Length: 279
Length: 100
Length: 114
Image (cartoon, rainbow over the protein chains, first blue to last red):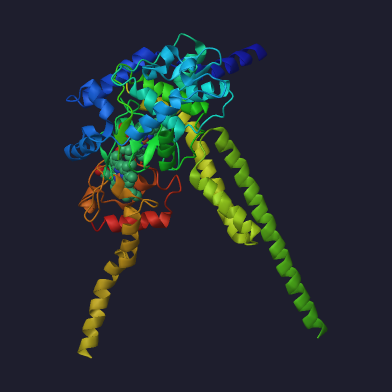
């Protein structure tokens, strides 16, 4: 009798597990994700998605093109290039911390770091380099670090995004965590990132066209007129979190690292178009 | 006269008791809000209005406005409870939003 | 005398209607809620007559009385549209304590004039 009960209890606790969670399959996710947008916006080519909100309004697009004639981010790229080339007090430099001297590598980030088991964005890699050489980390959202990342990204212009998820349990867990974050509703307004950038993509929230999630990372860092300077992808994450009345995560948190990992991976194959300009 | 004094004393005492009770109620509400908000934070789903209501409760408490402190703290707790419900239900529901 | 009788008659005829209709104050409060970002911000997603730069995430709200004749249904949509459509992007204004029951009623009063 006791045995039978134990069996029933065991079975009952197992029951929710009967339908096992779908096995993580990033490649299949990517196909479904890109396919979803291509079905919804059949006139857009894959590379068009890097233009984000400007795919949906001729008027906004014309204004944007005009702004790009004198790119507002060029000052940041120049400043970033200077900072990037400046030697550290110990004689080393940024180039020494990166493959290929840091030139033309932005499309490979975020990367999974096997040593720490964590996802590293290009901005975080810049800070890790500084700390290795005895310098303080910089703000991950704007300022000098955004300039350096803008410069490094400019050397990757047009290269296809190539984020790798190695067959490592920790890398796959990070990818899955980023995916869950992206699709989970949060904040008092009850939105997930996907509510606006998947479901309502291409529609207008007040006067703003919502950028589709596909290609959404490709133009970062961006010069934003509203900011009046250049900001990184995490700066945008923070802004979108606050918009839904949710307390944002920390710029170097696992949540944001994993989110960037998932979201950038979804745009694999699309060209880097950063730094960019936005209203 | 004696009677009068007694009534006044009772009234003063009564006020004091009411005041003390307000203070205790406010403190209890603030503790309740803090506990719920801790859970919300651990679930990575704190709402900014909960933080704002909690700050308002602490400020009112410090200023001795216990009724306002209690009301604000109760609002913070209700917001935190709603965010906890959201986070827990999303643990299952997020999958439904994934394009397939 | 005759006058008073007519007035009285009129008052009696109008009274039930007055009791049902929203006051101008309620409608004005509802309009503020529907267009203000920190309140309902319905205009972010819905266009309705008078909305400035409305969004188009949700359907246009016009002839609202015909659209949602039942006030209880309307209330439920604004309180928590997820109950009807789990995938909706419309915020749960009541459930998530964004608007008070009174504010939801005011916004309904306003939209019933559209």
